[in-house]
Length: 330
Image (cartoon, rainbow, N blue to C red; front, side, top):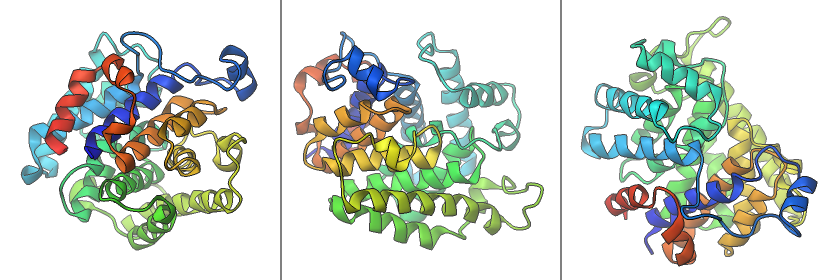
């Protein structure tokens, strides 16, 4: 089914479709893209945003290091380099988030990553790019640690770490053939088992903050916010309504846990209709490209590459780089 390809290309397609609607409310989106929001990616190439660009940076670092060699000393300098390369790329002109820009500037300056990160940021940038971690053929503990670490380089808030971990876990579950309707329960159970797990070998002293007494107290705050947003997801799925803006049920997706849950809601409203899931995600009042990124990644991980239009595959920006990553993991 080529699920890795479906996942990564789905992320890029969602990014391209939602890029034109980010920062707009639903009424304005429908005015600009009548009657029901954007239906097709446009352009040749169809341009993506920093979400896809940073996903490629993470994926390239993971491949360069190799699964067998994943460790903090091996991955940190490579990930630092790919992030700084993104920072200076001439294509880094797609309204990137200030958190990523500032943290990458500090990484370039040579600061230890624990000091370069923005400690209070839980913006969604960290879990947009974590999708390749969910494709790694590795054990759950390593996947969780790497997912949280790649987030921690720029977003040091515990919720950014937990949401990235949860996003990667969702991708792994779907790539392995898990059933979408069981996914929210799976994620809740996973969050509960991880609530007091601090990956000290990777995260070092990141937890040390005023008012925080232990690493477990630090990380549990992030998991608790993720569990709270999963409550909102469950409530929205009791009587699912495809016609109402998903942001009204979950949140606008500017922060990590909301981006995850709103993207999941868009996917779970249309689990067998990937294009409908992307179009619903693009027709949202919040961080539409990030929400659509995740909806596309989930749909592609579940359904595989064949569900995406060939015309989209041919035209998407970074097609060759995406294909190179997919070749390793499919």
